[in-house]
Image (cartoon, rainbow, N blue to C red; front, side, top):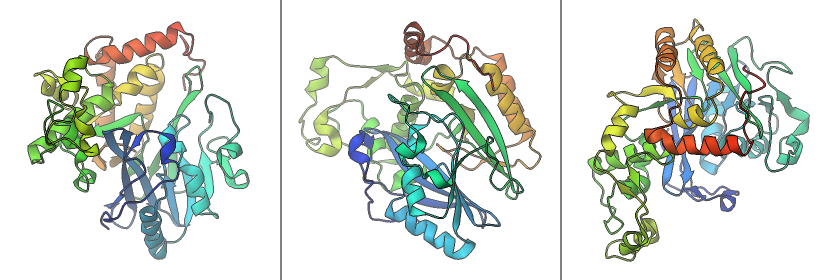
Length: 390
């Protein structure tokens, strides 16, 4: 399967400034022949876009969808092809209680497959009003809660919970899922594997990479492999730290100096508006985050600083529980690279590394996240000590 050439619109896109603004392409990849597939889309704020993934598992009863993406025409066509070969979509799983990008597509996906059972993690919540799931579009008659009301396909899958952890406004919970037949461990947000090269998904539209590869707003969006790589690495720093240390926000004079310059007079280039200035050592910061030539397995920095600073023990225990699964061979996160070769040794090494280094630091690229965390603490919106450690 290959990415289709036509764009697909998602009906909720006007509600949020999420790139690609309702025009989504989907890349379908077979991760494990005849067993596991990845349906990937880009999602982000403006041009800070990273891949988001729905994983499809082949089970004896049919197909399971883990962490649904918006069911565009491309997605439905790809799933129809898989259903014709391997049986119906029988199970839809929302494996997180707090990931909005994973929660929003579930009601529409449930409507697309009206006979599928829907499973959600405990502790689902909404903001600013605590609305029940049926009011959010989840089908009441076929929605069940993982762990509390059973586990789907427990003879073929292992389910490993992280949480629930108290966030103050709500809870954080994630359900890892090991597909024993393939050895694929599916996770959502807590663990990611980031590579130094831009993912295949950007081949259809490299605009976000080319936009961020520039040093000034009046530079055209020229396309070369090196500029794509540079744009990807800057995007990763954005997505990981929100405001990484090598990034400076220029003053109004510099900010407006590139507006409507020749070569950038188009919406694609935001008419030359480019509110960033990267310091010369920015690439060293990326190498600290992704030090090798292959994908770097890590806890997502945003979550480490904003979700886990008071729940380190729960996270480490979860990683070690994942490591103990005997069939483990691959890791498939819902973001960035997949599949990534995984083993007991690799996860144990990650847990040991996290214990040995400073946890969720305050300085450097972590400073902006630390400031957010301190503000939330001062306002009493997050707890000093979570009520549940997992």
